[in-house]
Image (cartoon, rainbow, N blue to C red; front, top):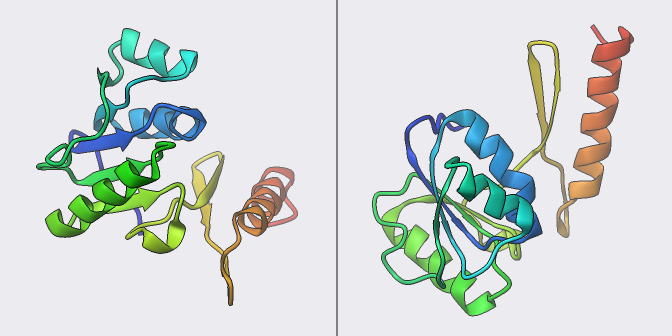
Length: 151
């Protein structure tokens, strides 16, 4: 499944490394992005300064996910993550949890691109998700598409 987020409200809770990695792809979709975080990495701050995202410089509050289609919960505050995840569940908002994949309603696949093909990989084991395995498979597929060993 892929989500068409262009023009749709997307909320990111937390301005750290996870947000820094995920925001460029969300920006590329044309999503209407609000970041809720008291602080952010310099790269995330630059995205806000450039007008690519709106930044609410504060902690998560109940109601922040109102009218939201997709939420990325990635703060270092477990209680805030739990509360945002609960709000997402109540409001039927797709929610990725960076700190607890099993509590999420959506997962972010390992993605890669080759020309006009996007590869997205999710792997699971009996113990849960395996992001490193997903990334390795993604890399092998993209490389195969690029060097012609995979048609």
